[in-house]
Image (cartoon, rainbow, N blue to C red):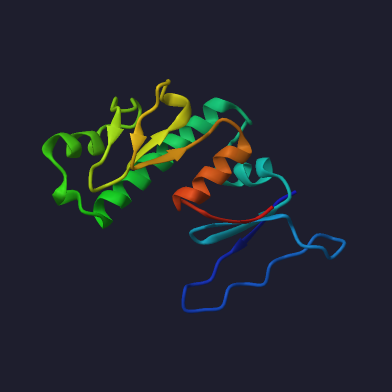
Length: 153
């Protein structure tokens, strides 16, 4: 069973983490904007992140695509988008419903892609991968990408 706690603002101390009924801490903590989510299994946490999650690859891919689009927009806005060529900017702005076809990416802004939607051989270079293969890989890759903060097991 997972627990969702409203996060505080950056100016305040974080709320104390909840504990299980026996007083022990949960295995994972995920920080997703205004929420801190605690649980012992990746599936519990993914269920909190994806409304109506049915545990399917399709659900995880849909969420991964939305996360990839948000991450890509954030990287472009915060990075050196103006240093990219016209072709690179076109790839960065491409709808993520279709993964862009590139062999190697060296643009000033990293490219965000979803592993299960990029058949081998996969592109190399400055790529941020979101992996929705299973609950743990999705959670881990979202954490590595900085989409959410993940700590614990």
